[in-house]
Image 1 (cartoon, rainbow, N blue to C red):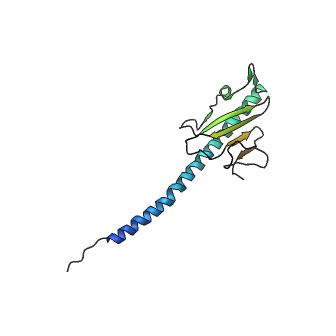
Image 2: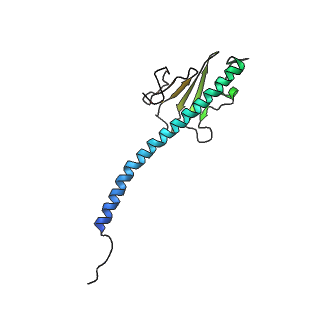
Image 3: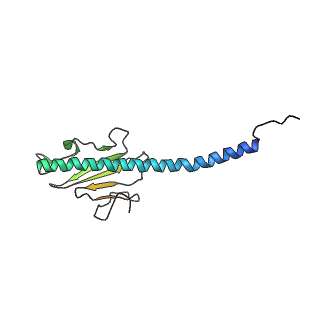
Amino acid sequence: MVKQAGFSLVELMIVVVIVAILTMIAIPSYERYKVKVNRVAAQSDLVEMGTKLQQYLVTRRSFIKDNGFIGLNDVNLTNQLPRNEPSLYTVSLNVTANSWELIAAPNIDTRQEGDGFLVLNSKGYRCWNKQLTTACQPSATTNWDGR
């Protein structure tokens, strides 16, 4: 009698079920990871934008120009983040004569949708709260870690 080597159908089905379960766990985890990576990249970009705004203020001593307050274009900044990829956040700038606030709103129909607003101001205060549908108010006790 010749013994045949190989896997039985039951063994093969067990392996397929295990792979399916692992995939069901891994894909959502990976998607959450990508959202977090995109948020951290946007935070880094906001800090860079804040640095440019502070340099503008030091150089010109005010955010006021001939026809009102400056905008992002006046500091060679874009209102889309990230700058070199498909836009995930839209940035708005609120300025007074000597202070500024950057607000990054997640774009609709992107993986960042529903991930909350990122806010950074001229005092270095920042905030992020995933639960909010409007921008949070940064203070000395708020942070970008969601606490």
